[in-house]
Length: 204
Image (cartoon, rainbow, N blue to C red):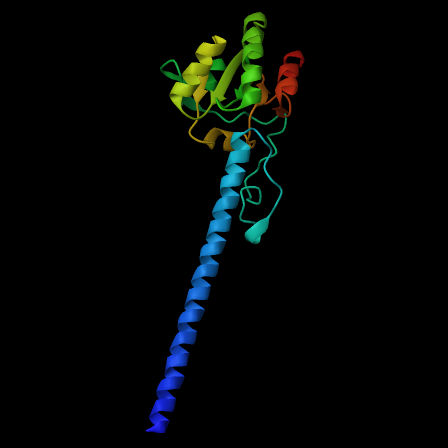
């Protein structure tokens, strides 16, 4: 009888130890998942605010910054990736529509404060520089973008990309950034980051 009690006692402790091990591993895995989600959300917020991607590489280099996506911009001389995107005022716009003309392609976001400071200056540039066509690639909610266009009286085309898809093609995330595209559809200069650098493209 005592042997049976001993066996039952040992089995009970073994079962408890196994359940504790399972619970520990579940909690550890859940913690890792939450940390990864938090890191990802932080990185997305940084990009949405116009900041540069983080260089931190936790969790086996699984952050956005640690991905293999090219994110330092396309070099001058590269053929500008073609696109066709919906215009905010209706219809579609293609980069091919500007063949033979210089295009200042500006990536923006309605919730980006530096982008909003840049917007009226871009409008002035578009009106006073006939040799350059300004095209803004924005993202996010259509209504917020329409309010921005109305607030700053933007007359140049504003198109909407899906999330960061076109930004990925142009190998640069964050806003505001811009490329000057020449008459042959090639990127004329390296990517310009920030208001001053973007406006300086007018002199290239």
